Image (cartoon, rainbow, N blue to C red):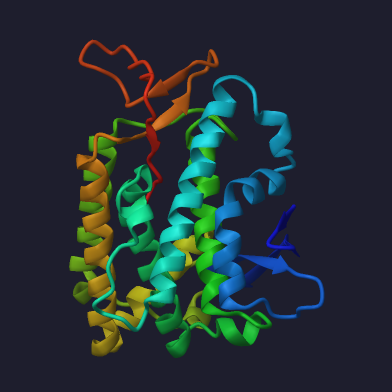
Length: 293
């Protein structure tokens, strides 16, 4: 797989620190010990194929039928989000920047909220590693904010593929109920921060608390722990939480974005189920993939 004459490979590395277990995805670029932030951003558009390959599947084997339609929709979505990320990166220090016309006045504009959240999360990872309460940088060689961000996005997409029938059995609800439930959970987690306390990671014994192998859960625990102790970071984290909720609200209210999944019989269901429990049929015009958040 080649992009811009650079060959990207992905290696997986696990960090086990008792309770908080990261699973890190590392770009393997020939001649580079530590891929740059820009190289991780450039590789973002290839995430659907990275996820398939990591699960032993060649993307060329899945281009037919409804599965092919669903995968192409995912690829298009990640390419669109990537274009917005590149724009945000190039205008990072320009508060008066405007949206590029080629993105503003195209179907790719629907994915701007996804990109805003992903960009905000990349910057959150940078702030987390500045404080690094769990010693991740000491335990993982060359760990960077971009690598942490990329690993999180990889895990999220892999879970999406498992939920939507690409890598597992379909398990999903309607878009509105999914977005509402997620927004409620985000608010409850943040609002309860002041009443919860985190001990040092090394203080936990394996039999004291259930461990997990989840980059997302580990990053959330890390961010919440820092937010309890560091007021400036709490303001940064609060801003990120606000962006997450805004993104969910945008997805919920955008008719161009719908959840899509493969049914057990191989048919493609778009938009959940109607009042009578019948799956809505895909429309002839382009229906956007709704990236989970």
